[in-house]
Amino acid sequence: MLEIKNCAFSYQDVPIFEDISFQLNDGDRHTIVGPSGVGKSTFLKLIMGTLTPQSGDILIAGKSVIHPFKAPHQRPVTLISQEDTLFPHLTVAQNLMFGAPKKTSDVLNRWLEALELTPLATRYPSELSGGEAQRVMLGRALIYAPAIILMDEPFKALDATLKLTLIDRFKTLFKDVEQTVLTVTHDASVATALGGHVYRLDDGRLERR
Ligand code: ADP
Ligand code: MG
Image 1 (cartoon, rainbow, N blue to C red):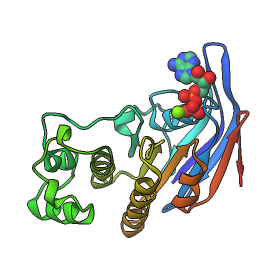
Image 2 (image 1 turned 45 degrees about the vertical axis):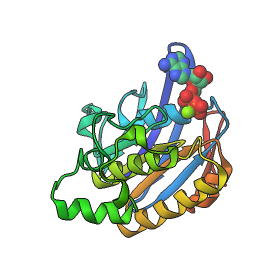
Image 3 (image 1 turned 120 degrees about the vertical axis):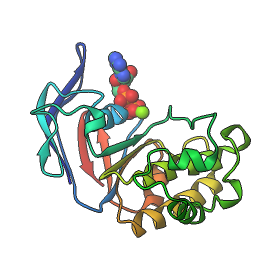
């Protein structure tokens, strides 16, 4: 599904990765943990295509996205990043269906139910709690049905109990639709709760824990 082969990346003259490789198979839901500043967000941006490695190759679904270069919107990948927000002028239902391949009320109702958002369908983002907004954001990515979902610190800024409840719900949803997911976080408890393999990123290297 995803193969990163001997990639190197530097910001101007600051090297982040010299030779990094990684593989994610269909249906894998793995997590990369590492302290702030090691390059976790950079790694996801290379996969997404908002950054390009100076050498090496990245394959998604068996095809290189580097030679020839594929822009982010041409990659079957969704990145949920820390800076993401919902569209403020759209309701929960409209936000959810924004990128949906099939925009029928059937699809909408099924997802609202699965996400336990039915009572909130007509609310606007300013009328949601942090956890509810995050649920809509993750739901929106799932409905879009990309080959891979990349999550950058997705459960940040939630209290511990809410975080675990939310992770649990998404673990089930991801499993139900066999979604391939790669998460990066500084928070080891998120990695443990998410279940899949845990890799540690340090000093430009990835090691399975
Ligand atoms: P993490 O997500 O693990 O906290 P990042 O991938 O955001 O780390 O950043 C890795 C390193 O690269 C940090 O030292 C950061 O300051 C630096 N960095 C991030 N973005 C840029 C940029 N656009 N230009 C220069 N340096 C950057
Ligand atoms: Mg980051």
